[in-house]
Image (cartoon, rainbow, N blue to C red; front, side, top):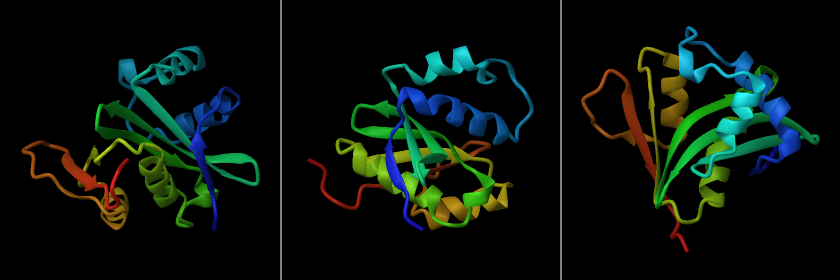
Length: 147
């Protein structure tokens, strides 16, 4: 299935926020729980990059990453349940790397006991960074030269 991957626009934020709220699978914990106004301010930060996947002109997924000079940190990714297992998550990762031409790699961490996420991360081309942490750190190097 083909998706349009692009930087989020202001008009996308309500759909992204709805996905963000529906995709929360961890307990509420203070600073990461946003109302819409706070979420909008957060994703508007100069170091935060918000990328969306669109199908039929609707936002069906998003990827939120931090821009650290020549690399990125994938903070969160969420795809509407109706579009999961159809390539939207992979398209978001590949599309973000394509949009961020100066990144030489993208890094993430996840709970290795979440087997669905572990399988997705490995299928998306991430490899272990072997950092001693509770969460598993993974990275994916750029496979094409950056410009």
